[in-house]
Image (cartoon, rainbow, N blue to C red):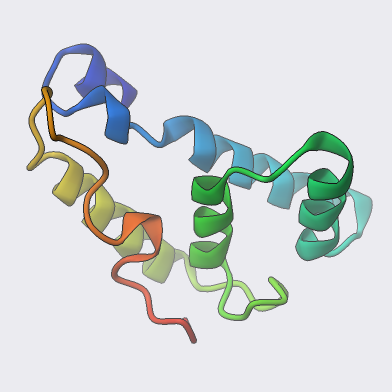
Length: 112
């Protein structure tokens, strides 16, 4: 997405790469420390400020439940990310553009 935004192929405001990387890092850290993802997300909220809503949305894509304890399969996550990229590619830079409707949670049901 960064490359697409940099070359003007998509609106730079919908480049959610940083939020996705942040969510992946949070999951990785939780696994390395043997902790729950939700615990680290809440701790971050308490001590480091609010967790970005888009990052929170990506965490929701990665897990089947609100407790962030039941991960979705790789193919399901890949489908959701591909959907978002496809929607992003439909945007054009300029006034009135923004994130595709539904943000990163679109395309994945609440129960995974």
